Image (cartoon, rainbow, N blue to C red; front, side):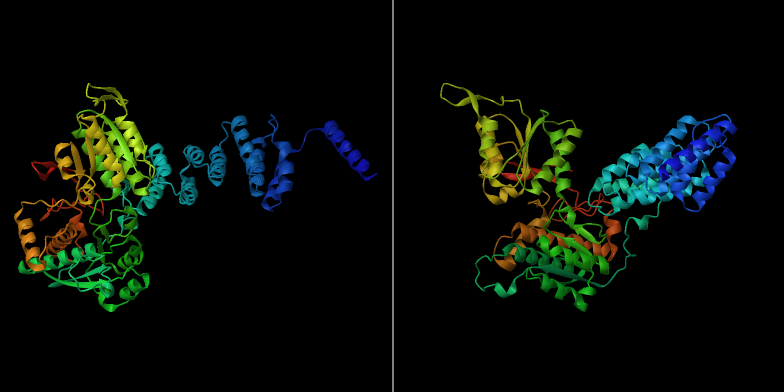
Length: 572
């Protein structure tokens, strides 16, 4: 009975409207506005809906559509709101409030994380009064993006948008270990006149001292050392420190005073925390260490909190640097090694066909990826990149030395991979099973394929030294010590006189590092990084270091055996 009454009333109202005239557009619109202002969005939508269709007598069609959409948005019906606003743009293309409609369409896109569509719509809004609101929405939305490449794409599409530039700069500032990204960041700061200190933490003004305190934090494991002359389990750590001590003595004779303080981390987190809580180390001017990567986090946090420069002597993991402006790597990063190798081999190899072999570790994959990208950009054609699984090194023989023809003595004279079809091989691994198989394959093929590897191969003794001489093998060698330099000769004599044995590579590394840092302290004071970033620093035993591209060494010498001795071919 009730439904019948409602139906009759509705029919009567429709009949009266048809009989006595159209809707009172003015009254209905202002009723809708009242409901909208009161927050009765559902009723407002119902009131605006009849006013939305175009009618010559209806002056409120566009406004009703707009407020209908806003009422829907306020109830969480974003799809309904967006559809209504897009329909409004079609039916009323010359409406004088179209910037308002585009504002809400763009906002809905940003709410839905459809950032590129949101930016596209916002770019059509010309009203200068709306710009602060647009920027506020973009700032909030873009701050949630954690992918640098996405923001770079936005910047490329909207190169004059300061909000995008600031969001990109903020993200780049979180990790400045990549030299290319650091250069990009500096370009954004200059182009948009951004405040540099908001993105790049700057060292305090430098100052000079008569004696500089240098704290060495390494796992000496003093409590486990026996007094015998036999090599110790942590001999590399001990050699590194012995080289540092000799460097302090050399510097002292030159009038450069360092107070070298040794702290035994014992490879224990609790021991490191205890050391870092001492007053003495808070007053140090420079920290060298740690030796193991899992010791790095507390030391680097301490470095940042107390504004103390810290140099890691042995690792090339860019993740260790983070956003700490006081953290440096003495070694090139893995990314740098890959890129410099790509540049070198593209210029050095006569034939531009290249193959890559790498292991299963994250380091190998990162090294290979950076090499491939840079080599390709420099004109080298990567024929194939092979990931060699553990116990799968036989695949290298299968790829390189599977014979297809033999000579009269049953020696292979042709292979599945034709002779002279390949110009170079990059081996992105220090796994002896991988690089030894590559070198052996090249020896079997007897064609002139350049093999690019690492200086660590020489130390591991998996390849006879004679092969480095007879085969076209080139090595990246950031720690290469130039043997005939007077400083090298003097160091070798001094170490043998002091310790009765030939210095190891670690001893030479410790000596060179402290000589470089000691001279930087003397010339440029405690906070020497600004000077360090301006120009390459020549070495004493080595080719030196270059921190112009970031907080890791970007100078990579490439070496080859010649006449029984290793010599630098080129440095990049």
